[in-house]
Image 1: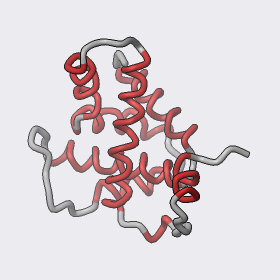
Image 2: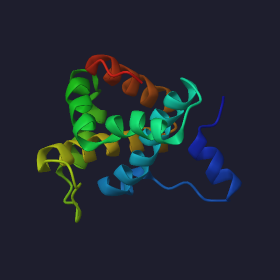
Image 3: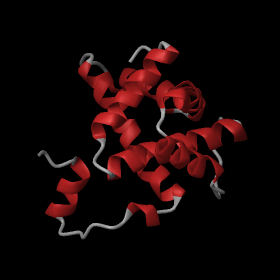
Image 4: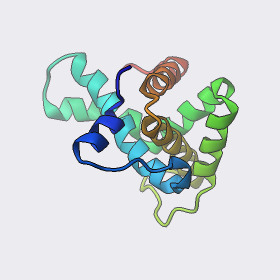
Length: 144
């Protein structure tokens, strides 16, 4: 069985496993934000080598809170009960910060989406994570 990225990193840096159920939703969202960004950047770069500014432009409209909020709304019918609960915990978490260009509702939904991405990543469920991102992009007809 292949190890997930998170497991491999922990092994290489000699970090013991932690029960991710003890992580706060904002901690899950923190890592989920980075992982979602990495997935989108990977797809954008794989589509063709171009100037960094163009790559950033293609990526930034997808990873912003408004698009993440739309994506999770489209994905909700396809989530398992457990995934839905992780999303809700993230959405309902009280964040000390706010996105500059997002409504409160979009920001909360995006935080829930990122928490779900982080939770899947930390569980080494990268296939499911990518499946959801792909499904969400298709539902929104995003050009990645």
